[in-house]
Image 1 (cartoon, rainbow over the protein chains, first blue to last red):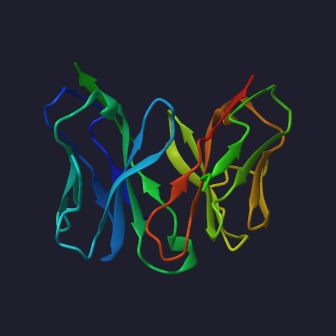
Image 2: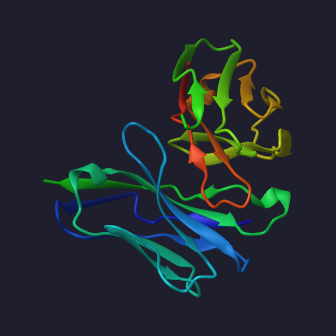
Length: 118
Length: 113
């Protein structure tokens, strides 16, 4: 079974600075998808960024980028120019790319609580 | 599109009562997932459906939990009888086949006293 580990329960950063959240995963599969979700106090789960394992290029969405190291099974999220609105819980998630029915679920890490200091 | 709709947003009940959580998926989405979020266990999948058929219910904690999807536009998660340890936020999420992203509803915060 796949597992996702976020080793940083809490992180803090000064506004306008850069912060990196860590995520590692364990899988025997070669094709899969990785995601970062943001959960603000409203508790709504919001997709921040996604990465396909077959793509070597790291995904980027505005101030958010990932460092995907497939061999190391590492998938970190970098937030540049941190803003107060970035304060939230961040979850790393894995999903198999296999098409059999049981493979469609997301497996989540435990989350990292990010605080932005003004 | 209104997104995934869940009701109620908050539910407070007493131990032993029946609780029913509801979800309306995004139109055209053929996968529907029920997740539970607690401080101790994080986000865990309870069950998911494809084209209204339950595919994987291995995360359903025990027989007190049941889920149905009678049609493509409605699903329920029922707890009977409820216990204090069922207190959690329950999310419904849906996805379209061959698409990468799951869309989450706002969640139902359940408190069992």
